[in-house]
Amino acid sequence: MRRAVVPFAFALAFAFPVQSPAATYVSHYLTDCEPVSYKDPASGVTFTVEKDGAHLVATGADGRQLWRREPHADAKVQEYRTATPCIVFMGVPPDWMIKGKNGRYLGINFNNSQFGIVDIGNGDFTFMGQD
Image (cartoon, rainbow, N blue to C red; front, side, top):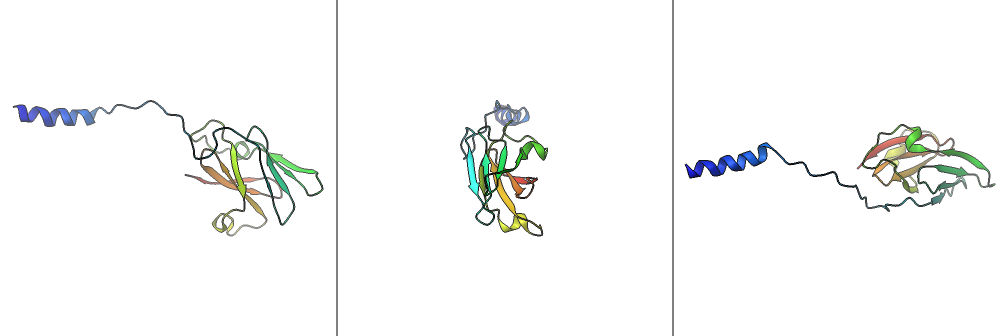
């Protein structure tokens, strides 16, 4: 009789799993939104992330603002890990992201591990995925 109780208790423990409380996601990026900038060497356009971490501004070589966009919100990307993701990286996108596309693109990463490309000409964001 005693042998039957141990396997039953063990199986019972897995039948009713205990859900752990929700944890705050902490990425390998900075947790605070900080201004970030990148200058495209080919066009001379400077891209700046504003202090809120959400707005991206393109400024031409002549100092004139070309456009101001909020990529995550404009593209209606679903919330993932954080309610207000920040842009934490900008640079040349990998070839696989721009294969078959016309124009010039900027790669961006958010602190919630989502990423995509921004059309340098108009600021349109294309969501490419998440880790």
